[in-house]
Image 1: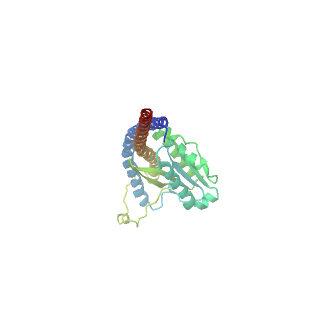
Image 2 (image 1 turned 90 degrees about the horizontal axis):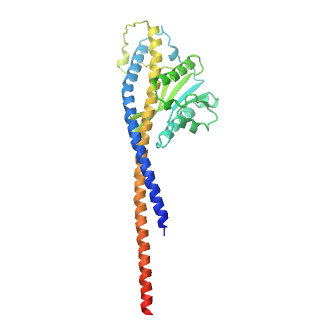
Image 3 (image 1 turned 90 degrees about the vertical axis):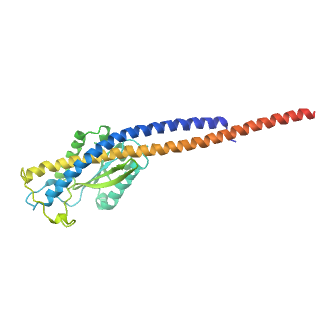
Amino acid sequence: MANLKEVRIRIGSVNTTMQITKAMKLVSASKLRRAQERITMMRPYSEKLNYILGNITAGLEGDVSMPLSKEREAKNVLVVLFTSDKGLCGGFNSNLFKTTNRLVSETYAAQRKAGNVTLMCIGKKGYDAMKKFTDLNFNTEHMGLFSTISFDKSQEVSKEIAADFIAGKYDVVELVYAKFLNAASQDFMVERFLPFAKNEKSTTATAKTKADYIFQPEKAVLLEELGPKILNTQFFKAMLDTNASEHGARMVAMEAATNNANELLRSLKILYNRERQAAITKEILEIVGGAAALEEK
């Protein structure tokens, strides 16, 4: 028979936990609303810039070179991993870890074996989980970027990566992040950051017709200005996507935790009432038995 005092303590503990998870759910819902607004406004702008660059590069005849689109043998690889700074968000971070591990173990297995894969962790949880892999190089300079989400700080990191690519420090740069779909679901993405992906003219019927652009200013000047701007928006979009996905995942996780705590609380209350009733019945039987013994005397 369970001790009634122990059950009462457990009921109080579960009730406190349920209040905490309910409060965390409300906080995450509030943060999600703001994060969702930001990514909803950012995504069309980023997609349109990529579309414009794709059309321009598809129409070039090779007379203009873009350092940011230069294809090289992938000897040195940089993987930028976006994760959260905090936990309690279900399988959100673990899915990002699995996606990253699959990327460096399958796509870039040779580079990893040679010790030429660098992992840039944006978010503390990424480094905490991946630091056990001693065959990877780590860049943790920008690990706290999510502490203050701003385009200016994001742009500094994006420019640094672009400069390293142009200098030949990295031949390929990949982004691993969570694309926000809705509060309950995310897509875990691997997206080529550098070099710029080239449009294949034969993939669609519309691509067979070359776009006729009048360039003002000249192509080189335009691409020099447009390329970094697209990189900056692409990087910042990945940050906003991951941030919104994190809050959505945490809200769902805290709602599930609240429901589980509520169910456990219900079970404990049933157990408490059952044991309390059993104790009362036992006391009544003892009293009745004692009274009967006295009458027999």
